[in-house]
Amino acid sequence: MKHSKYIFLVTIFSILCLPYDSRGEKRRFVTETDSDGVQRVEILAGKHFFDPDYIVVKVNVPLEIKIKKESGITPHNFVIKEPDAGIDIHESTSTETKTIKLTPMKTGKYKFYCDKKLLFFKSHREKGMEGILDIVD
Image (cartoon, rainbow, N blue to C red):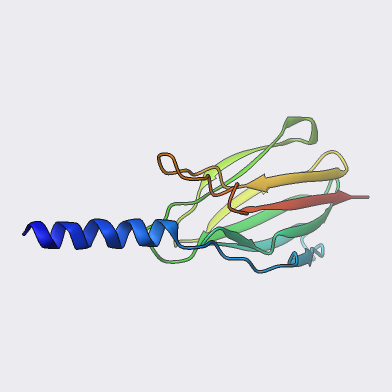
């Protein structure tokens, strides 16, 4: 019994300490406005990444963000705190798609990220789980 607890703890520790996903260049996505006047983007949250992680949207046009996470036990969330731009999101993710609706109100480049952290380990954001919401005219 003692041996199986040790194996379990080592396995969990190994999973948590594995190197994060280093995909290199940003995965850019430019939204288009659908016939109903709404911009849409789908985001996948995974092992310390968002895909896409550079999203270009138009200012003053409604935006729907559909987000879900890969299967697994690691929790993730989606955070953008830019009240001047009309954006204040702190949403947990799950394997079921969630829809976030907003209208970006100010041009600029705003960071989104996952702020999850386990004990004394680096946060997911520190491991590279962040991206840019680029709001343009």
